[in-house]
Image (tube, rainbow, N blue to C red):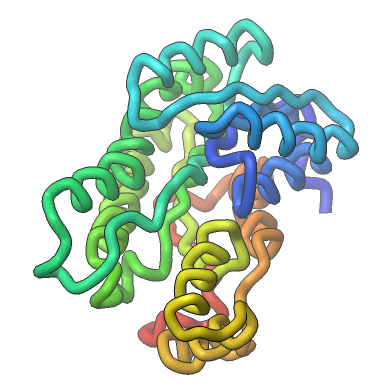
Length: 266
């Protein structure tokens, strides 16, 4: 299927790895020009080198979603290098503070919310004026299964991602008549550097290897993932890429779960 993305320009935050990287790859393959952004310059440059084989127009510009001045600088750099932006994919995020609720302090809550919820708020506020000038736009926010099925040891993360669902829905009602469609996706236990780090920590704690850590986590913590494996970043990116396209012209204000059945409710 031709997604009709040629001529469109996308900004993908968190584009140095995981779901953001896979999304940037698919967007390039579909003919879109892509700017990837992430916090660390070295990782971003490495990702850009890997993506360069896909062809197309690609730029890599570092930015910190927790700093409004950094995002303003990103906007200026994007305009100088790529010109207009009409697609915005927010994939930057952290696991954040974990553990029982009564053991998580104010700093843990603040950092998790600052990156995972206020980061996307700052990003959209910064780039929305560019999308509104085009009379056409796509915004995709990366939430999580945790937004609808919170886990006791990940309450700050779950709360931040639930906030993203409300943000996405509110934006979708505000700007759809200007041609800007806003949706969210909610992955579950995807093979990314973030879950790799979680599983390494689990393996170290249990005195086992990564394979056992992943399998035991699936068995004990994610029993409703029917495929008995982690998802792939590409499996999430394919949905995001479609939502960014001309083909998704009647899709707005929805949340798409890519979770292998992990969320137990309908």
